[in-house]
Image (cartoon, rainbow, N blue to C red; front, side, top):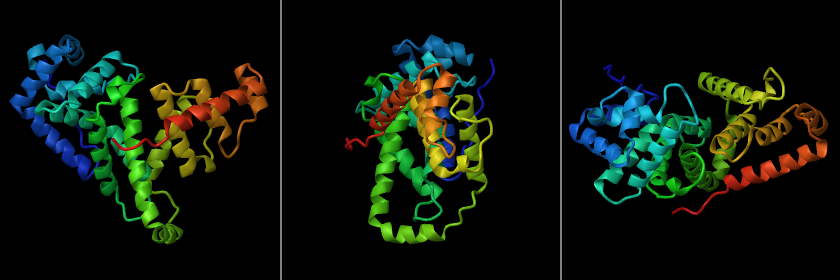
Length: 299
């Protein structure tokens, strides 16, 4: 039976330290026993063993993470959702297993946390990648233990990511308001030339958006790669993943809010509807997206 590969280091600083810590957890026999007991109690052990090519009594954190990050990239994997919901229920408890369950959730969500962190870094403002990374991981842990996510409809990972992003944005907004004048002056001095990380992120988001039909044209113009456009596409893609927006709703937003918008008449012709119906769809879609992003009071 093949051994599962160790978790790859995903980024520097806080994320690399989490990966190193995770390797220690995977080697801890008491942690492995706890994970096995969880999966057996939740009637998920056989399914997880099957997808990870493992024995039921050999299941541990490495296999649990493999089930939460399916290698085929399927975003509608029912087992992934079931395992994450079970972990979220445990993380909402008050015993030692709740802390461990939340730690597993954090590890599973590291790729999303890295994307959130990169999306919030600015050239100036006193917040480095690692500063925001710490903030994101702390928010993710709090949300995981809140007991709110596993009771919601839709995909738990998407709901978890959205709540985490709200926490991070709220904290950053408060910080920027407190230091508004200094930040404004610093931003005026910033070099607007994107670096390698920003270019890679832009290419990744643009590729995902193109695959989902959100780009109105085949090629992405220079204007399409600006930060505001990329953030909109990320929000719309997340909303599609969580079930907040349908594919048509997402296109209604993405095709309209761009440097070269698709007119309602052209969009209606492409989609086999009327301009008035397309405009109504966009209005409803914007309202749903806005409602999903409203900041909630801290728990």
